[in-house]
Image (cartoon, rainbow, N blue to C red; front, top):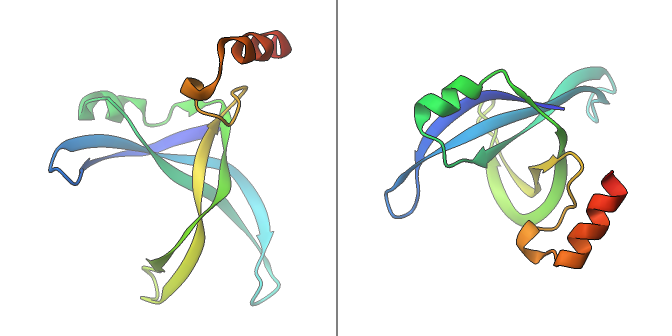
Length: 121
């Protein structure tokens, strides 16, 4: 399960406003590569919506089936706010709904969708 933890109004490249939701995955224990000590973290990502700001705000605290997964991406610079350090990353995190194949629904043929529904049932 993932939890909706906040909403944000942003502007696209054309200056139009849109609302996104910030999602947080399950808490997980990981080991620091620098110190070797364990710490707790949770993956987060944002997802665009068609909602207005009030509707998006009303969803904060709700849970959705699925996971947040690390996926490869083109390298990009990321600034660590707490230290100001700029690092290069080559991954991002994406929400994957529960019980839905990783392909976009528009790319799934009717027969594939029927087979998926039979397997999911």
